[in-house]
Length: 85
Image (spheres, rainbow, N blue to C red):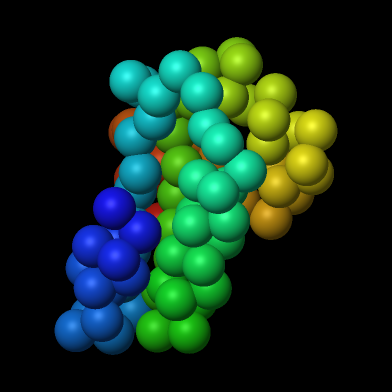
């Protein structure tokens, strides 16, 4: 999945990406690492990444690791999209 994510923004300049976590119940440390690499890739393309619809348990993982300060996290998809404006 990580390789596919990275490839997805390779041809884009200034990509705007919203990742919906509605079906994610748990994230491993490897998944957090992959997500950080993806954020770096998006930023290197002068783009923006938004995360949304995180379940409390998943959000807790972001807060424990303090990644909630690094990622732009929104309550729902529309709020994430609106944050690009």
